[in-house]
Length: 459
Ligand SMILES: *Cc1c(COP(=O)(O)O)cnc(C)c1O
Image (cartoon, rainbow, N blue to C red):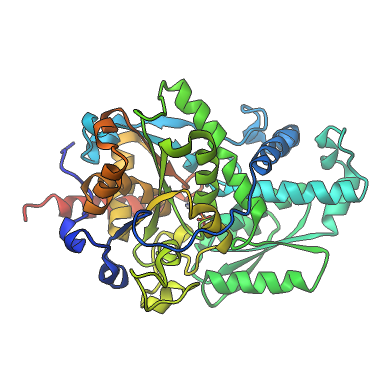
């Protein structure tokens, strides 16, 4: 494996160490750090106890989940993924041991949903089922939650609808979990959502409603249907606290795994975490959970496609970096088209809830091109045998971005982090891929291989 850096970040794209607003509009890779001008931080809408409550809920449901999903037998109903050492991938990305140590958080293998949505999505379905069952007396707090697999609970759930608007993966998670409990389920998807995701849901008895427009329109349609009818619960990706808390529960598991791997996190051992970002719920929830455990020793960077940098836009719109754009702007408003193969991240507008949660905790946000995503998907396969989808590769550009970008360098210097880099831990969050059909994955990998070999040609 050649050792040349495989990220096409070119420092001259960042004019004189300034934020490259022109590059953002032109769809080039850019980086913003929290030291630059950004949106004002509002009040954080979640509290510490909320995350503990979500974790306790997942534990209460574990025996039921084990019964409903045979793939959870080995983990006793717990939905968790391993933290993988990734030394070969580290070298393939052009990172030396002086840069720290690379790990991959393997949420691309999460059971039941096949993506990070297993955390937030399933938590919200369980919370809704729990409230409904308690309210209708088919469950008491002292019960073994396996009563929810019995006839009275299933009859109750069958009279209720769960709906969601999704680019794909959230629909898969919600649809799979809600259908397994016996809910009536309707998933609204954009027309360009992957056909296999729609098919997988239909096989489980889920109604899939296709919308001609993008993800945002699918959400509006789902929200409207639910507003008119009390028997419908709409999982609102742009506003849901329950989703965000489900994601936040991931932090405790990671902390435990880091400890098992012998990784210290403190002033001399910084932790960098690279999180693919769509509406922002997943990365914001995880960043919140991690900040709670590691304080200022953890540095979370969000990763977005160059065509869909909605969270970055939310952070800088209306500031001196992008004064022309007003707040709450969508990526279309700055001339971007939201077209990317990273369907999990193809979101035009950030979640306001996620923005409020992430704003005070965030280290930075960077963008990646689809070509980079495919190359990194390919490198993850050849170096470590990982099978990830394009969205899940967005984190892999992070460490080089951190080390090469002058703006990131300023962030490191302002915190005196450079002397500690060799002891740093870099965790790249791989967010999806388990259920991608073989032929589709082969196309992704071939495209990545072609891009990678084109890049190593002499220039
Ligand atoms: C949904 C998703 C994300 C990002 O989650 P958001 O809550 O939308 O920010 C990242 N990766 C994959 C594979 C996803 O499906």
